[in-house]
Image 1 (tube, rainbow, N blue to C red):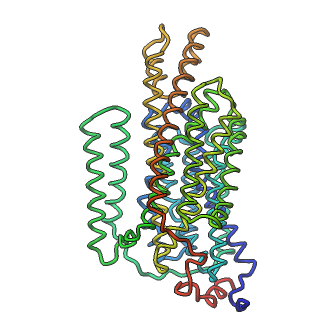
Image 2 (image 1 turned 180 degrees about the vertical axis):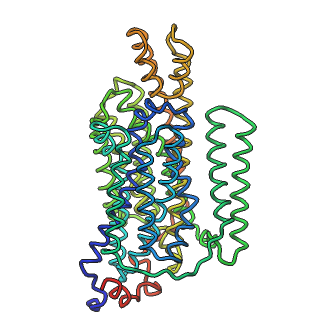
Length: 530
């Protein structure tokens, strides 16, 4: 039967979708564009190993703590208004990061970037549900929305390589400023004006508990891994755990909680979130190492390394789009599990190839990275569908927000854990192989990170500089190996979890169905576009 005229989406809705994909792509790109820039930033600002990790994931910490709140604010004040304010704040934070005079200012700017980006996903989803009232059309729109995120994550390193080849490292942030302003200005013309409901209590104490708890855990664990046991760092981690426990307890007591814990009664829903979190946790640190490995060990320029990373990026986007085809022959859990096994094969292949250090084949390295990217794609594409299908229709927004939290925490945990493992491997390996005749200051600077070693070689005699450079390359090879070993272990655990825990999971073609409270608002949607 043909859809009624009111359900036919006009071209303006698709134009609006195109506009919504821009900030999603931009914020996703910013998550990985730093991977190639870190050596350059480290050589300029000389951060400590811990500060370098904070630069990478402080935005994810802020985002994870605020995304649930952002969903509430979208409901109360309207998605277009929150999207506009978020884009303006994102532009200002990008300008601050671009011209940061110190690593401390850069860390603050990255935190502000993460805090302002949290409005993008909930505001975008709220707008899409009104712009596309028919479930099949909405599913298509959401798939394109996710493709923008996947493409941004995958293309971050290549874009960063191009920028670093021609401009200074701050350019990777400065380019966001005109884009953010353009989206903020066009939103009023191209997106529907959806009024806020004025409902939904924002519990300030819950926000504080979640934010401080996450920061305490990440800071404490990161410092303990990097520096060994320390009472202050141990107390920070323990305090973070207690604050998160207090947050969960408060959610159970509130009539209108910030986080609805009843959703976790569904095993496929919970394990779908865990799968997305774990695959990011396992691979984020390895992705960071690989982008740097191509430069500091293999010897490629940022532009050449970025060009090489286009290959796994394109494989990732193509595999994400093709993942639903697996459902013709496999159950969702088995399809996701097959992807994890392919990713595990990619991680093991990388372990075998990378051990050769500077003599490693670039073709084999990129091939292993592409295999890993292809395997990870079904976890995201099909795992998202599992999460949404096993959540009540009227709580689709909450389910999406929880997935955002899981993704942010996964990236934070992955960069903290993988980065710390790599840092420990690098520093220990270099300490054992530092050339004799190196003064104490140069030695300490070199052991902190590869950027410090590169900077130290510039002031050394040629022979000593060559020895330090060779030792640093060998140590960085150890760091990359350890990061991929961690990825392989995490993927092996995930494979067991998926094949066992998601064996009964289902995916509906039209998850919103007739009970979707928004699906029947075609008349309102038409009015919004008029």
